[in-house]
View 1 (cartoon, rainbow, N blue to C red):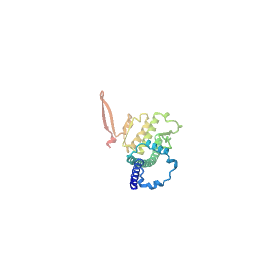
View 2: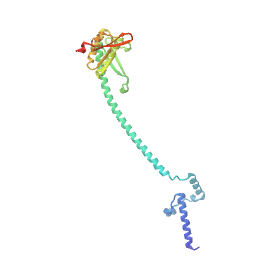
View 3: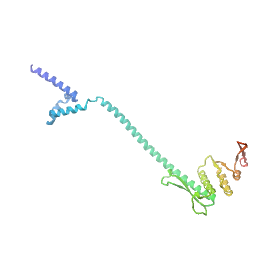
View 4: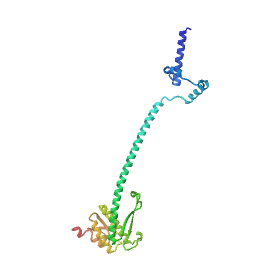
Length: 261
């Protein structure tokens, strides 16, 4: 075999080895073979034991997943999508919190103004019905008015302070009427139903109630269930329930002189 043939044979072997290295170790020596020759390798890393250790570690890694790049790109797209969703949610939460803060601020201002007006009306009506005394509305949680409960504190004229539970039935009724009409003076509703609220009142207090009812009827329509003739006299329409036949109720409506006027 002449020299040319030997060179050709060695060139084929070299190309074959380069191809095997490329397939097995993913290193293309045809592109950076010169650089590879110039790399300084530690002596202990050239030993057969070290090479066998590396081969074993490569073997333990198993086959290379050629679809891993595509899978990574798919997972990465999903990750970026979720991150964007997270950012959108955080932005929405921040926007909602700001809106809640604004609503709470406006609600607090409106509530504070309304409760002051109602308390003022409550005190005026209380003094009018009782001929004096004091009446206040108290928030059970002053530090958080919007979540607070509401209580009332009243002091009867010419009497020492005591709990409302110790008041008589008529006194309790007048306190309740003062509070109800205080709310109606702040914001009247289309109609109001009062069921025998005058039952515990004496005639003098019934007259006060009737006078107050006449004034409030300019703003709301009142449906009053009563057996008191003094209250009936001020009604525009009387609705009576009779039972001409046993077991059969009948409603009779009568327009009073006030309604006809």
